[in-house]
Image 1: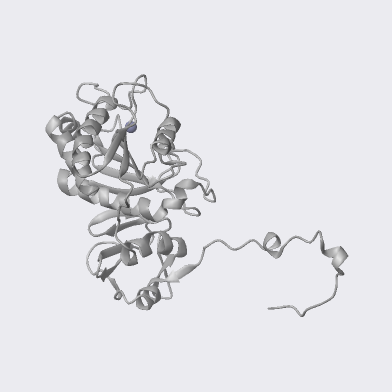
Image 2: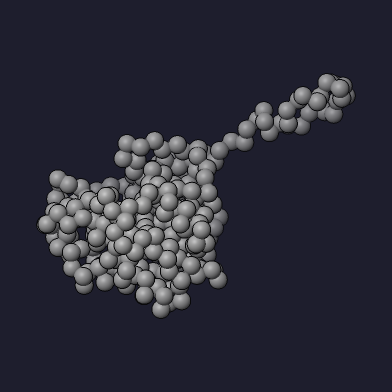
Length: 320
Ligand SMILES: [Zn+2]
């Protein structure tokens, strides 16, 4: 509604009136949208219910791949690989409804967007997790520290990426301690186009969890996939959010390539705010957890140089 023009208040009274935007803050994107309507509008095929399985699952089989969503769950599957929505889809009036931020930050980049492409800046920073007094987790087999395995993985990745035309800087080339914040600064001072942090996981003392995970920063307004007890300020907007789309596409590319090459269990792409190396980045940044050192079967693999070579080759392939 527009108000009629008025001469009241007189100009002299208006100087302290704040602009309208300060009174009426723009509403955040919180609208739920019918997935059927969105899919029809974008001509990507119909939303169909899956007939098999115990849960209520729906799919869209579009030109770029098969998307499977589950009502009441943030877990979704894109081209056979797990990723996490910010909000669980709902059924309203017999239709699948999806949160506006999930459309904007997940479905549009995956189903409609341009594929991941690297520009002319081919500088990549590879960050072997931990180091020095910070050993990370330990292998359930012999207590060898994570920091040794991440460093070896990074050293194997470097020549492979270089032969694909990347200029590669490692945040550390030996067993030294570095803060996470200094790793982010390292990427910025080296003008990195991509930042990749390499880690191995642990669920000790539980030996069962196994598989691959890839993490990237959570878009503003969305809850993180995991918080591990840390604060998760949803309205925070930092430089990492400038790369929401590239972060997702890079994480999806890494996770799917590593899963195919290593045949480890797929634990999916996850969004987090608490991981310091993904915060305040000035380029797309991901963190890979290349398996569980607390799982005896996986620890045995991670301890083998041949397997770490596979992990390195998969990273290089994903970044081709
Ligand atoms: Zn780690």
